[in-house]
Length: 104
Length: 225
Image (cartoon, rainbow over the protein chains, first blue to last red):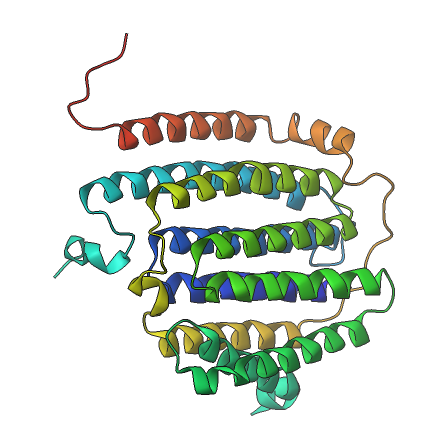
């Protein structure tokens, strides 16, 4: 019954991953991590509704989804602070502009 | 070969979707771009049809509607060249995922998701876009980076996941429990079994708050107070 929900969760995660890899705008890159979080939250709730192994529905999946919300909020705050900080140095949102930060 | 035999149709569907997504990413020539909505529509229709044929009971119509909205919103989020529209489409994704969570008896998580994401996080995103975005779409928004490799990677990942599910034994769902996702049950579970984790989450949020203030403040700015 929940396989449809799991597939939608996986599709959302993979779409977020593709966007994360292909987009060059820093804000969109971080938005794509939020898209991946949506897929994971859906997967957790679906697996809590029908746990593998045939046990009864329990609340562990939903509890983990709530913790994921807290992590997502922390990640968004830090990521956007970082974008604002970088934008002050160089007024562009292009991820390629910060190429020299990566290892040669 | 055996995996291909089992998952033949969905793998073809996923490949069509990957090609459609590749064509829709920013920077492709406009004459082949018109093909993308057709490919993606075929993919979405085939996927939803597959789910509906496998679902024995439950609210199939609502599931189909929310799944379709979530997929359309996600595709447009990562392909729209204007960041503000990407954020608006992401709100569509959040609303659809909220609907799917309600269908999964997770009412409290659904409400929290809508409040925190659509209410708080997305507003912050819109603020930062207003601060930093130029008026016209910039070149880095009109050109995707390595779109072929990205779409191929996504396709491979999904195909592997899909093969694993097809071989998994189907489990009969347990009987639904009354009020499984209600705030009362979830809260009592959260504050008994997961009490330490709740405290740690609070510390994490505090650390993120202090970190964001420390990062975003200008260097050499005089201390307040």
